[in-house]
Length: 172
Image (tube, rainbow, N blue to C red; front, side, top):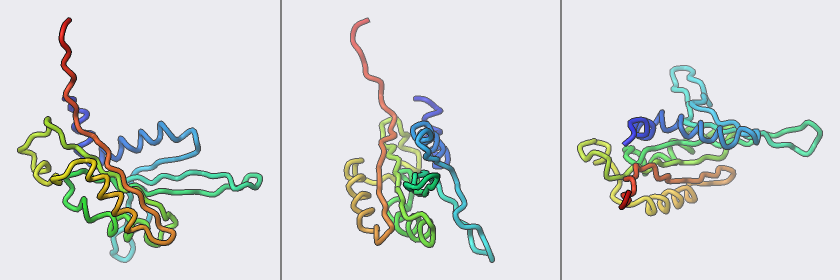
């Protein structure tokens, strides 16, 4: 088991960093820019500011010479053990990050880390839902459809980030 892998995926900030770098590698040449911990609302008058896990901006030609528009997506990243995994999509992603924001599109990304290498004594393992990743995908995709209203559109994705046992080969 790679210690690097465990650090990356069992820590939300590291997982978000990894996803941001992956998006950057895949999308930067298309004029799409992913950023981490973007402040979308500053703290004023004692109110807490708002920082997103990942904020992606795309520059889109607007048909006119030199005219451009911007499309944005806010990505909220959760580990499958997060205590608010099943309830945070609307209050956090929609009601906090997308509300009164120029960004009207969100992605709720769930890292699914259930695997035999995960120590059963880890408290996060006990917080893991009792269903599998396919059921997680169905649940979160359904929830995203239910909370999308008007111009606000949310998608959800559960990504398998479990460690894999190497395949055993017979012979030399």
